[in-house]
Image (cartoon, rainbow, N blue to C red):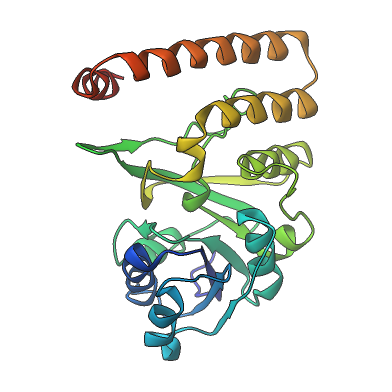
Length: 258
């Protein structure tokens, strides 16, 4: 264990995010941790996103605005542009939990770790909940923690880019890949990020469920895993149906009770 300040590359991927990008930028540039490289990858926005980036240009180490092949293609661009020892994604609309987050994470870490992860604060429409990271005990079932709440050794990430064939769950595929390669995961008991449920993965929940099942069975080809995910797909179709027929207030109450 060592106390040091490694260079941390923070990457923000955004597309037409004028209304929420500024809070993400401020969350990064106002971190108390001093050794940060900040990278923004914009997908060729047509709103005021680029104007917001230019407003903070002096605080940004590298940015580009060009068409890409989707969110994970853009994230791969950010990984390849990173020079830090560690890389983390705080995409448009996401924020660090507080100003001391990176300082707290890197106050004492295991030098053998290839991936560090923690908890996520999730903002629903009418309430906020802290999602505890599952750790690795349920990795065969789902993404065990939010990608906004993980830091990855840059050398590890450059050798394991996101599979862009998975348009929603490439982060889950990536984590499973590292797990299969016996990369050392380190859990920190901290809230790392704060994010909304209004992202692509939430809107396209059925596709997410199906992609997760495909990824899980690819990495863990066991009949019990396949059966679990088949049940999960059916369960999510039922949930999807009731979300459409029940009043929104009832749906929110059910979410709170989970």
